Image 1 (cartoon, helix red, strand yellow):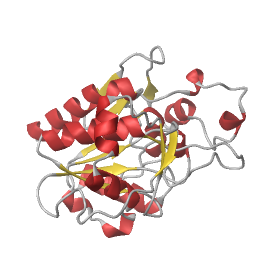
Image 2: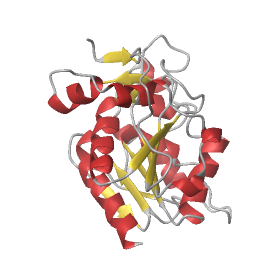
Image 3: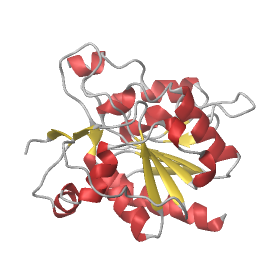
Image 4: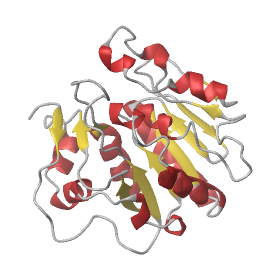
Length: 246
């Protein structure tokens, strides 16, 4: 296996999540190349697996959506890591990634939280997808649920507007993978349609970040954001804490 792997697992007999019970909605992207380049990208396998494991062990079911539905590209797949290997060979889990749902196939009333996964793919097609935006806002406002994102997944929340027209990030403490940590001279970076930190700040948010590999999570009301894969465990714990407090 290489670190870049596209789902080709065989069809399993059932999907990962049930149709009833507490649910978390994961958002991933179908984009497999940085737009306008021949540089592969994908969704962070770490950030999917770590969050999935913690949410399901806490009694939640997980649904996974992408703008187009179906198969999604993965990054950072390493079978030498125990947890990744466990899920890589879990047919039900991999089937859920092979057959992600379209936004129109789920309903916001089913979910306690939405979680935007990072990886370079997250910069494209997800952030301005109107159907995903509506799901996120309905979960946040109608269900009084949590909006969460990690690393480049924060790109998915920077354009979200509440029903009153105000950006979700306005006057909020926000975290994610900032352009300050990117390799600005590289071709992949030049393909970005916008900058995460700059856009958050332009929309009234207060962006905080630390060293690239440090755990860093910001919690502001029902908005929870993390900087990198190392931040996922704390992020999930904070999301669960908010859900239980509600």
